[in-house]
Image (cartoon, rainbow, N blue to C red; front, side, top):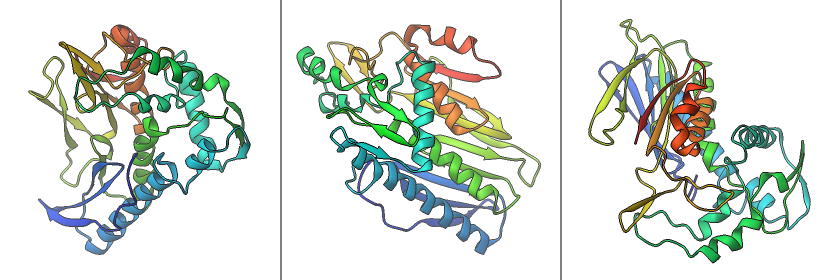
Length: 302
């Protein structure tokens, strides 16, 4: 989640008999599809969606100086009390850390000081990475809800779960305003409710395995969520070796040998995003990890 506060505006258009609202948040194009023709309701829903997305971005962005993340990251060892929503995300992050055997770690954001995934060949020096490793490790955080203590120099980064959380929050808010079909899509992470008025499901495209950027499989999404994690836009390339932005917090180096991307279909976006991230963190064991999950459909691109 990045950048300055966005302008409080959005666009709304009637397309093929349904309203489509668009705005930008969390450095992603955001789209709200509403399967009705009530203009006033559509304006209210898209306005509510954009404000909620911006609220979450402003609250949990690591780039701001006026939010809870900044306060925690600059507490210099002091214990701070957090609000209920922040505690919810911290508990979720702690669960992910445990499920991934420490590979999902919201304290690993400090590695961005040396890793710049801009498509170049600028690989950091091993000693630069090694200097940051003592500042990484959820096991070093003292978390006793609602009190949190970080060691001086440590940082939290909610970027790995923030967008999916926003999708679910916005979806539930809009679902409570109207009973018609809807789809919330934030940069390819989405959640839907159907069927549409004509009795059909939402048509959503996902990349087919082994054909990144070349082929799309259309799936009929009646109800549920899709989330994708991958290195299509964030990577380094040096001497023919591609370095993914998915970093191993234990070593400070990118996960090697795993899929380029993972798209997961699940009941909600947070769960789908969690499984997509854990799939990439599994590296070469990604397919074995997915086989251990129940009632999950996945698309991998190697």
